[in-house]
Image (tube, rainbow, N blue to C red; front, side, top):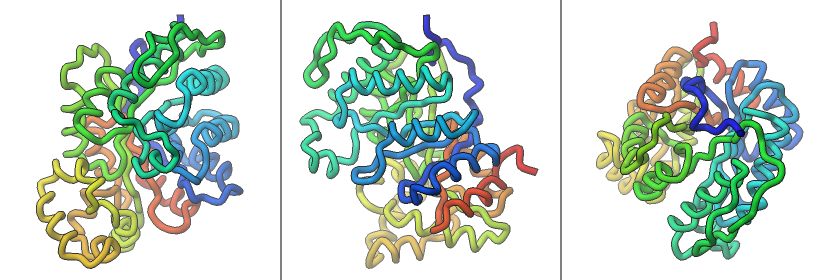
Length: 334
């Protein structure tokens, strides 16, 4: 019987990961991943944004090119792949690299999914059907009865991994986060993931569930670390320019300064002006930034709020250089 996330231990708590930037030159992908492993990061997360690189291909490359890194895919849009074939891809990776894969599933950005003809009338129904089927298939069980969107009834994978990868949902809305509590192994929270947002998301996740194991809660945050706090704050600001837009409302609403932030965005001429004039105190809450000690405190605050993995997204133009400075915030860094 394969080992599932429910039968695992709490050893996945307190992890710190780093994001593989989507615009990293292809020749830097493996050097970046290997350097992240050398520096002591626990995880590396790849993204799948329309028109950039594929999530499964990136994950396979990084897994093959490193020794111990856990690789997360955050996220694969549910509407983009047939669930049976997605399960085959993920099961193969999990077989080849046991215990080193986390699979993130999400709705996908509505604009992108509509552009490709893959946005459903009911995104919530799709993601619940998809995740239910995916987890069953990864465990070697028959696909469930056909639903409104997902058809995999009776499908059984011949090749299944000894360690079934956790499936987390990268979703924002309260209903979708509650659905993650019903059908997934946890949540992936896109940036910014301030502690108050983590707390609110966990409340939604735990609504109406009878889970007997601790969920995975993976958080993304823009990150900039420097011995000079002002330098780090300036770098982090550029990564926060979009957070005043409506799509990020769920991230902002739980914050004590939510109303003021919205007023600030309304008063600014554009997103760049908004980010440039954010108060320092807000930037500290909305990113992992500052001196190494300040960044460590920000990571610790997210773990305390319930994150099992805190993933740093390098802010600034040179990701390879930023990787070394971000490592100064790791708990075990001298």
